[in-house]
Length: 295
Image (cartoon, rainbow, N blue to C red; front, side):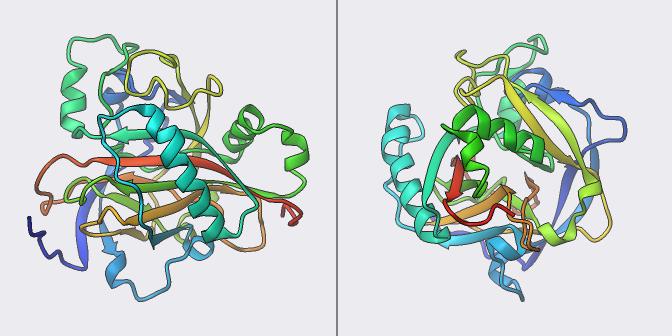
């Protein structure tokens, strides 16, 4: 099916962290769908029309072409751990020059946000939901504190590893062409640390049959960085993203030499959305450069 040609800039509504918002939330629960946000109308630029080089170290994210083995969104989760994880390790090593990559979490999303919200009707706030849809609020999966929590929970010999450069990166792609609920990236240089709020992401439904039951198996949760509305934010997305196009973006990078170290992001809707629900897969990874200075 032919895809619609989109304008170079689209208008969207982004959910930001509200003043005095709660400092803990529970992904994949009915209560998670009832959160209140500070919603702002913003302009989102298409990476295909960008006038600057959008690279991992400059803006915190990058669109990269790669030939992936096709996956079934309803298929065996073990296929993801065996095939997708292996391909992701090779992909990130080649892209970043890393000496080691440890995938530690994945999530397949195949329902609309509206379907997920409806699945929570009549449930208690703490009840897990059966589906995972697009996440529509501005956030980094890990704050600096949260990144350290993940490192200590996942990586063998974490103390030794902190003596070299390390990072957490997401590898995100559509299982089919993305024509609705695209993933927006907030340029790392356009958001300040003072606009990032630490909010703990707790996983009480770990191991349950809920959609997020296997999203993070290493511990009880970690601190995220959620984003307050601010002036000068520059948002980007990749229009009509194809399955061979991959978004790589940083949650954390220990290297403090002026390069981008974190990338807030959010799914969003526009009037141009069309077609079937978005199907996407994301793999979160610890990335190491053994022997390189950590800062």
